[in-house]
Length: 309
Image (cartoon, rainbow, N blue to C red; front, side, top):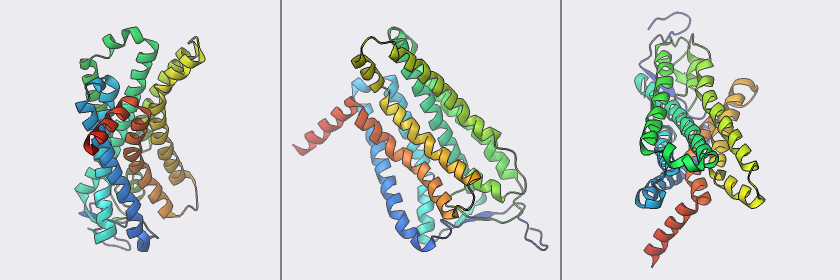
């Protein structure tokens, strides 16, 4: 470590996560809703996995994708919240250099995989609505397995180079991270040099493009149906997926735009927004699919009434 007028961290052994700058005294109280969200997310996603496993009628492509989504959500929230609570409750602000970038990999890797799952589910709905007679021959188990593997590999292949490059940057300003986690955008601001945002935009832009194309074709097919009731019923099969997509992309987009382009926003606002858009999907996805999917509702009600009787 070289010393001059400023301390140069060319390869710091650890980083210091400050938590929520400006709201240090309120962090314990802020942790309460975050803990509640994490608990609800764990309960909801494990419930989805359990119900799909025991209910034979749910052994279909859409619900297999929903299980993959639940696993990704569990990993995503778990990669963020335990360390965050360690900062809030026990002042465990130090994070090892390698652990920091491991956390970055899981955050951005799971986020990219979740985006890929939404894209695959959009294609599934496109085949189900636009080619219903060929659905069972197109969406076979081998196709599902290949799709799941492709989504996972896509996330790893795109995110791993980004994380490896970030770990090689010279951190010449400071090793103090004004955040609750090692997010890519935050680490960029600490590095002396970095590459552009093209890769990050590309990662999610491809998924959004295919989702838009799929739903464009779905809407065309729906509007060609003969009656209003049929159109509404068919569109209803996509309702939960559309709600989940909106709640996944919109908060992330708003947080990113505010962080990069809106001036004079308190730093604690950016930190809280960033944490919320990672914790909200794992909480809301099981609720959305549970409310919108009759098969899941019926099976869950059956389990509850059986235990209460």
